[in-house]
Amino acid sequence: MSDNLIDGRYLVTEILGEGGVGVVYKAQDTKENREVAIKFMLEEATSEVRRRRIRQKYFAREIAILSKIRHPGIISLYDSGFTEIGLPYFVMEYVVGQTLLDILKDGHLLLGRVFSLLEQIAPALNCIH
Image (cartoon, rainbow, N blue to C red; front, top):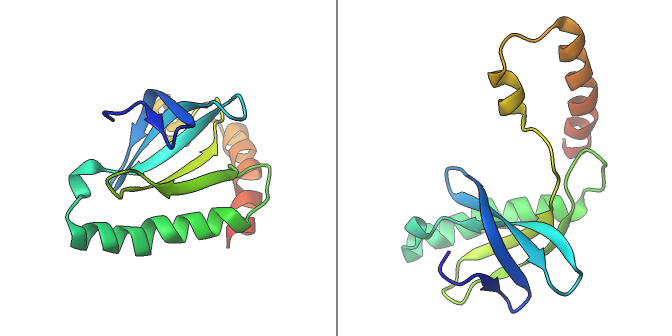
């Protein structure tokens, strides 16, 4: 991320993670005075064909889904747009906590912990599907 201020509003502070087509940063929403997470398409995926495909199939779909969902177990979508070079991004609620991957890396889970996690995850998955 070369420019730390996005859309004149979001001040990017650190990288949170990277996946197949996107990278998520922590940022400060200077308008609403809150921490947010911003997901951008990876800059390596900047060919016009790939950008169009990802924008239409991945980001547009993810934005459409998140914009309709209201559930305490699913992050809220705040904003979306395009960078100056045309990369799509969306701004989400920033939530502090462990990822499921981090929890699973700790080793074997006791059955009670598994049930606790499922009780938290299942209602959110039901809401999405």
